[in-house]
Amino acid sequence: MQHAEQINVAKRLLQLVETTSTELADAAYSQSVDEYTSSEVAAREQQVFFREQPLCVGLSHDLPAPGTYQTHDLSGVPILLVRDLTGAFKAFLNVCRHRGAQVATGCGEARGFTCPYHAWVYGLNGALLSRPDEASFAALAREDFGLTALPASERHGMLWVCPTPGPVFDLEQWLGPLDSELSGYKLEGFHHYTSRDLTRRMNWKLVVDTFLESYHFAVLHRDSIASIFYQNLATFDAYSQHFRLVSPRKSVTQLSQKIETEWQLLPHVVAIYVLFPGTVIVWQGEQIELWQIYPGSTPDEARFRVSLYTPTPADSEKARRHWDRNLELVLHVVENEDFPVGERIQQGFHCAAQTHTVFGRNEPALTHYHREITATLARAG
Image 1 (cartoon, rainbow, N blue to C red):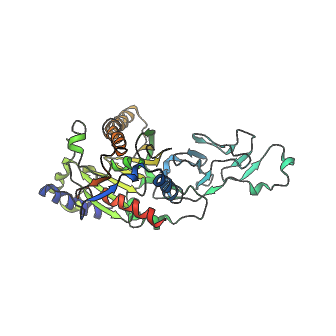
Image 2 (image 1 turned 90 degrees about the horizontal axis):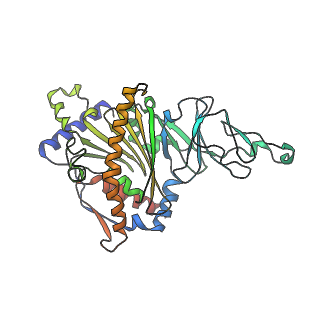
Image 3 (image 1 turned 120 degrees about the vertical axis):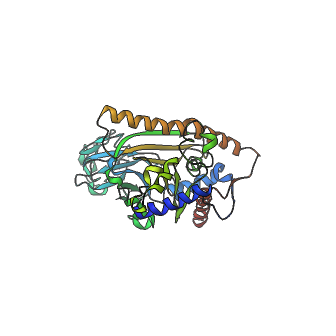
């Protein structure tokens, strides 16, 4: 967040603290529970949101050096992420062009990829380099059988891929007004510490919903983080489909003791960015959390990855203990408090208790998010 924007948000937060209020939507909003339970809706979301749009698949340090690679299967499409020998970020379908086996697993360093089925060999640029018994395939030109490239882009320390082959997308246009703000975090300088892959029995949007209000802090998180933050108090800003929430820690009032030009807001807040539809970037303290949230095999399942990034390498036991404690707190709050409630909500959506879920005026991020979900699907027909 640029410093001028930090001052703007800080003024709004201090006003909210003084008036014991929060930023409000124009009206309460109702969303059909079919959005969370319908197989038809789920199929449309899968195509429109997770096949045809750019998806953030990590930060730059996930591929820290030329020759590093990582496989990515969360979207349901087998993707191979590569930093080639020139340092450029590329992405391919992780599918051998011979018989369809996956040519890479996990992550690591490589100078190429060998299919485990028949040993066809591909370079980091996706080109087919060799195949056993070449004479049997002489009529099929090698240059026509390279790995299938995917549109890929690296910007402001974020890695983006569209899972469907096609033209390269304009990422600056996709991010819109949020583009310059994200550049201020200098994400390219953050170091990947660790990741956790999780599956829960709840719709993927319920996972996103978890981040979109602090109205529940005093109740659900009374024994964990409620004492740190103001409750039911946040700023909200929409950037086309994307948006930002900022919730203040109790320490935010310390800013009033300094002149505005010296204000540093970020140590006193949790800043949450939702990059439509299912990427959540969380700034807390000095760390970055990246949440990649995807549909599971049914409307009642979500698959997601949380990754922790640190401003400096965790190259000492003391540093590792510090970041381990931070991650343990994050996972405790969501795994033991948020997501068990979310799973029970998902169960409740399948009974006749309600046809719609309701978002109050104090939950503007939820209203914006679900309006955009509904409107985008409608535009897609």
